[in-house]
Length: 282
Image (tube, rainbow, N blue to C red; front, side, top):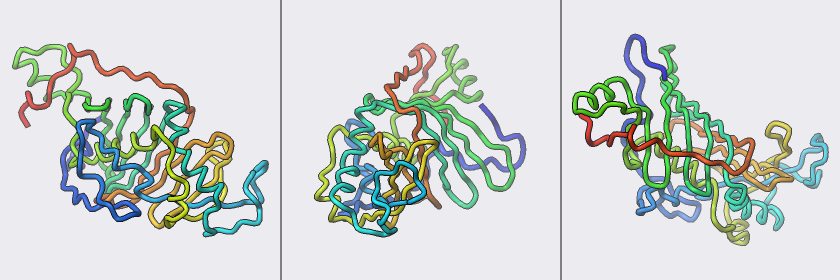
């Protein structure tokens, strides 16, 4: 794990911040504030952020998309069916390796790498906070499950635990908090899979259009776009391979790319190495 060596410390993506909760779905429903006992708000489903239609590209070898399609074209029934199944197919596959880049503000960007287990709502991440003013970046390890977030203990937290008689602490556990930017990103991440398909007829009624064909690595994709987000869906796989969108309160786009989609097993930390956040001083 890295640390700031000098100067003003950059904002901590794991620390609480103000979030206005004003994100709304295409249907106008407020999302992102209410949380159930499942903890991660499924209302942050990426479909709520909007997606974009698919488009043709004559340069894509083997593309099944009609080459006569134009950017901004309305969804076809086949497009709507692909979009309706994409998140469900992610769930069926089980998990993936991920890379995310997020423009949090003009002063701060975030780079995330790790693995996601969509079926069990678990993930293992390294979150790198990158200041724009040249200060050293800060890398923090995060593990999460359906109801808890574990962050690698910082040196001062380890010392506090030792003073209270708790040796061997490596992780700090807390419940998800929508005021923390990293928790907003985790909520979005776990919502990129769904236990059932969406309704394609409803998707055809949304502000979604065909955008283009492209590639993620060597995999051909069709890109669907709305005014605020993009879905990159594998032509052969039918899974979501990339999502690009915006979260309220963030200064720019969040891009999630998924590779090596497969069943993933992620273990939470050994309880003997964990201390609760509320047992530590702020």
